[in-house]
Length: 165
Image: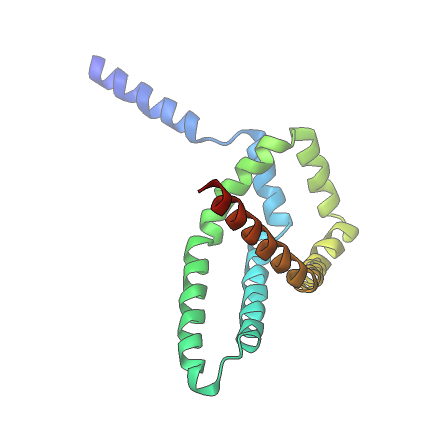
């Protein structure tokens, strides 16, 4: 009798633990309304675009293309495995749960269900892609200065070390 009672309590408490809070249910709904799984797919497309551009930037010769393509395929496989939506989704729920209260989640959910909210979600991947490209261009423009500063730092550190010896 005691074992049956103990087992029943264990099963009951486990089912309570597994149940989501109303806030977590709203977060799941928000994630679905925001099509975050599609955003992850769009991220892969952006990475693929960057990789194709990297082939040009690296001056990959036609005779080297097979080597590059193998690396590119391996990298894509790693990204899709290690950064899959199945792995990201629980973390996203935790992030939203940590930083937003239930009212904020409800308000975001209400907004993203609107026509304007859906339009923003539809346009955001392109906005992010263009923003990322702009940032890359700015970094590339700054890279010679950064490299010069890094070289200067290295030289000054070497001088300092030589004087200390």
